[in-house]
Amino acid sequence: MSNVAAVVVTHDAEREILPCLDALTCLNLGRIAIVDNASRDATVPIVLAMARELRRHGQSMTTASTSW
Image 1 (cartoon, rainbow, N blue to C red):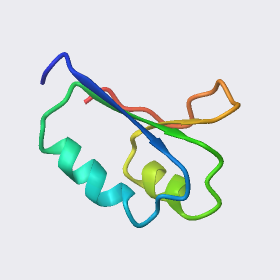
Image 2: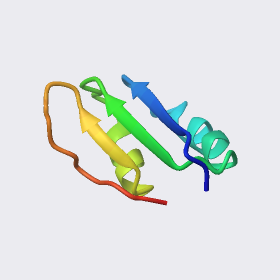
Image 3: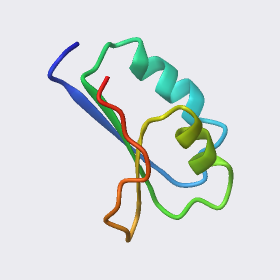
Image 4: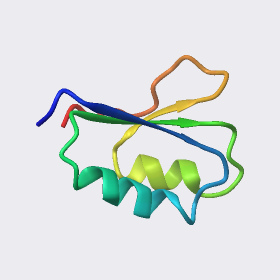
């Protein structure tokens, strides 16, 4: 595992988020965090199903996180 992290900012990205996260996962990064900007599609449920860290724009809570 590396000391490098990735942050992905999303907004209504349900079609793009899985390929993006799959590509980042292949890089063996220390952390991948998703910052969602009020998506109205299935972006948030997709990210939560993959147990990534998610922060919703305007909220300071972490909904789900991992330390892989």
